[in-house]
Amino acid sequence: MPPLTSLPVEFVGSFPDPLHQLVPALPEIAFLGRSNVGKSSLINALVGRRIAKTSGTPGKTTFLNVFRFPSFYLIDLPGYGYARASLAERRRLRRLVDGVVRGRAGLAGVVWLLDIRHPPSKDDIAMGEMLEAWGRQAIVAFTKADKLSRARRLAAERARLEELGPAVVDAVATSSATGTGLPELTGRIERLIGSAR
Ligand code: GDP
Image (tube, rainbow, N blue to C red):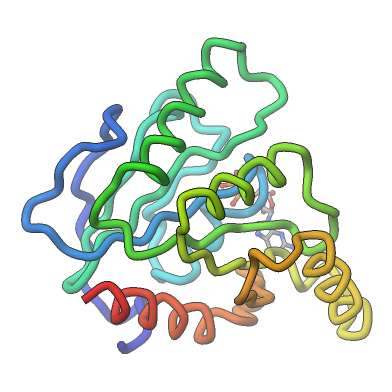
């Protein structure tokens, strides 16, 4: 697959139903992570266009935002663990994310974003357990790698992988600021899509 920056992309829509059927059916890749983890920055850097909105954007917070590439759909899920969200919002969000991870037949895999600098939060741990419970293939994308020196980055990666346990089989350190890891992440996404066929 060429870099995503060179592929056409089209916004399909924002959907409140986690099982909203996409036509035509194509493999789907969902992006998820804590609010503020750097998800929209990473998606925009990967795609080379400002398609994803930050978690801070009002509205659209509990919807699936779907983008179509020629051979797959990218599903941008709202960030979880937003401290200021109401209980009702948190429940809606949980239902949406659970629904996607558990129920979407076309889901080829998940890109799960984690800030390289911080141990996984309670919400992150719960997410990891859910991915494992439903047997979802997850690639961890560590974000904001540019915030650490090379030596500290390697140490942080090792520490994070240890904290996350054996469920994580694949991880890439990325930075949307410098472009680190973006070709590698694209390659991993391509592999997930290939394995879905
Ligand atoms: P989202 O809420 O997960 O969509 O996160 P955003 O993409 O809005 O990013 C949250 C904050 O982290 C913003 O202030 C970004 O500028 C910053 N950020 C995101 N990615 C990076 C990165 O790769 N490097 C650095 N240094 N900052 C980043």
